[in-house]
Length: 129
Image (tube, rainbow, N blue to C red; front, side, top):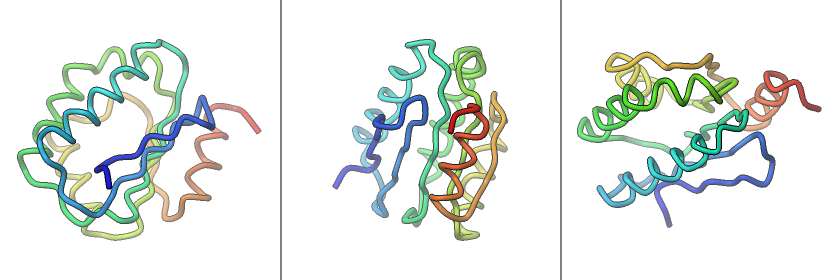
């Protein structure tokens, strides 16, 4: 099972579902590269990050994610209409908070507790039905 599964079938909503396993460096780099490719199309998008199964992310990857956000801040703010995090558990919320301490998000975001709520919020922010 991959660390992150990216589903573009609902474009401009992109669903990114994380597995419960700790990613390898290669898997984490692939995930960041895939996100960059989507952003580089320069089309309006709203990512829904389904972190329902996430258990832990090492500090190495939290820092790497934060630095990636810094490096791509302008591109993200240009195309990202809203970032939606599906986070039903407080430990995962702590991981997100740790990443945001390194770098604030360059786009509006919302945290919800269910995937259904997350997809609805993304559609609302993109003004699609």
